[in-house]
Image 1 (cartoon, one colour):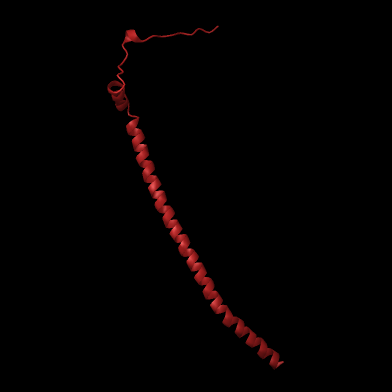
Image 2 (image 1 turned 180 degrees about the vertical axis):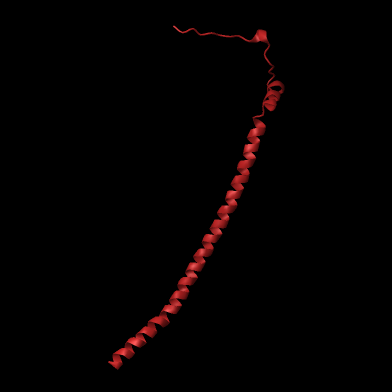
Length: 97
């Protein structure tokens, strides 16, 4: 009985001795994975910030390009257009049958 108890105790110590390096290796693997995920998150946050800034710039450009004064200036200067006089306006009525 003492012999079996001693063997079981030795097996327990042996398993405990093997589990410590295994747990350290597992901790190392998880630490490496955590670092990779942290780097990926940082990269994605930088990309998100860049996209937001680009989006703000594009919205500003849309506001600038769609300004009616700018459109009128281009129509007059580049396209040779002018505001229609009242005698140049033609109205067409379509009657329903």
